[in-house]
Amino acid sequence: MGAAEERAWVDRMVERVTARERAERLNAAEALERAARRLNGKHFGGRLRWRSIRYVSNQRSRFGSCTPEDGTIRISHRVADLPAWVRDYVLVHELAHLVDPSHSSRFWDLVGRYPLAERARGYLMALGAEE
Ligand SMILES: [Zn+2]
Image (cartoon, rainbow, N blue to C red; front, side, top):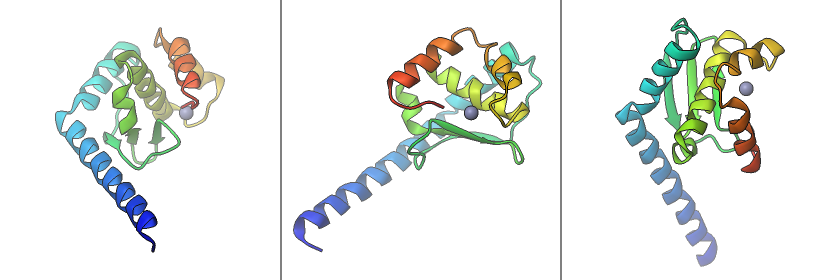
């Protein structure tokens, strides 16, 4: 490994560790869990149940993912940098996947309960990524 390559490798490792530590710090603050409970109460009649909802640092291409089978929701740590109303949309999107894992019209009806859903989708599209 040449010096430049080595430096690039070290930079990448440092970035990775920093992102992981940041995700851990964000999870310790439990803001995501609290926001999810609030959104569940407001838009889903408090009916949704999940096992864990947390920030992760190893999610590159997408903002969030949901595994309905085991009730886990993972949100990219980058979402913490977005405005709260966009973060809430990402949460509503993944929460709705607990009900319907596909992007069916029923799914979008659920997501549409969040009044700023369309605007938030536009915002994320402008960032060059969607859901
Ligand atoms: Zn989705």
